[in-house]
Image (cartoon, rainbow, N blue to C red; front, top):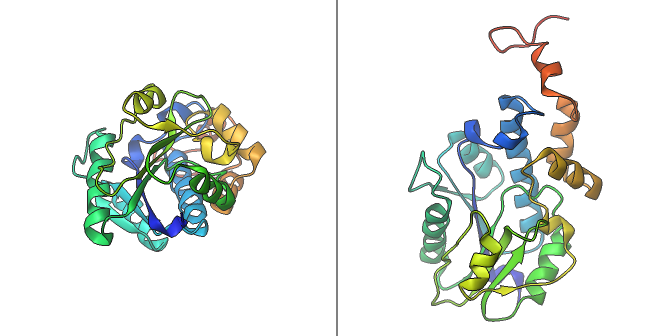
Length: 233
């Protein structure tokens, strides 16, 4: 099945709350920039794979601006200010079908900086032509992507703890295949190190170079004034 029949939805929370598990490595401003860089690389790779469209659901105006710059659709989060990820994804997926018709749906993580277009294209080609398919993340417990190839079925996402098992229990087929960049969503410093070893996209590469990562967060904070601006050296 052609990848342009698939339309992706991605959810991004408020930047100020993003990537809290990297707090020991990066200050808040750099974590926000990292989220935007990884989103850029994820979206760019997905579009290069030939999918029909990418819609990003978010309550954050900074993310909205970044999404528009990428040439994608920004969808307002119906549960802004909360962590109701599944409700946001389901609402965005319904909006995608109102916009494009009875299309296939793909829920994709926002933080896949090592994703390669050929990985996503191959995974879509390998997935069954009908029904629901999940692609587990690198831990085997989370879900990197959820594909729905049934124009009568809603996305019905079940992201969260142990989501791979819950998606399988709800009837999704667990797709096997060697797509390391597609499976590697970044939540921790170890994940980010692993993504760099695989090779991250240009936006994440530029961001990490700019902030001098890896380095302990305290070495950055010692260079900051009380206002949060860089102090003179």
